[in-house]
Image (cartoon, rainbow, N blue to C red; front, side, top):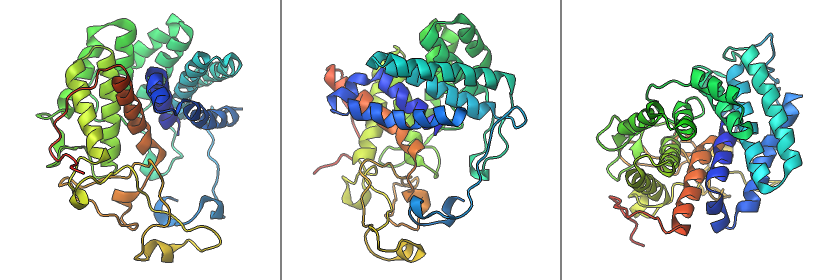
Length: 359
């Protein structure tokens, strides 16, 4: 959730006019305030269940990060989210809330620095590969919020200049590289960002589906493409390969919005999700397996996505292709705000999707 909130809040900071253009700015502030409030309060089993959150009555133990239970990856990412929130709400004019967020971010970051180590209490699916990207993100976000050069020095020490595999909840190194390039204009960070996209753009190491989706992995294929598109738009704003990255990012989002061949074309991967019927109707394994349409539509939810050949089945039991998650939407939503920004400023690129929607 912290990673999701960080990406969402940075999209609000960078592409505020994109949210204004969509008449969603107030809603966006309200949306990011929910997790930020949760983080403020927090600082003082997977696919085995099908049903409503309010019906989950099984034991759900709370995990704690403390000096006796390391977790600088979690603490660092949460500090980054709080610091980004402080910037966003200061820009909104809510100085009191911004100050509260910043104080918590500073405190949590200090805790993370003093208690380095990856948290070991998470489920097997969500184990962290390290904490340097989270610590870097926290440091550079705090530098932006405060101007404190100690934070900038920390960020330079935490960042890795190797090319990242993706932008995701577990790998945010390219985001820190891009932010550091903006702050320092140092070519070493620009080169790292360019290297990342050399791997992602056509001709690199990424598989492309016949219709043009940059397909990194079967789990959350749409998520990876949406996040990379958001990152490309941020890099373009920083003057890195501006025209190329804007075009590529827009084409990736066009694919998700309907420029693909699923179900005859014009199928939006982003408006779908398995769902439960309204109460008092039951919602259990029987409803999961029933051969009937999903009773609800979660507008705007980005599902897992197609296989490497553009095949995607709208089947509730296929959670790989049909599950939704907050981190799936974060970069995708940021990219949409970025494209709205381009439209509002008259900078929309010409695109050439391989399977354009003809409806």
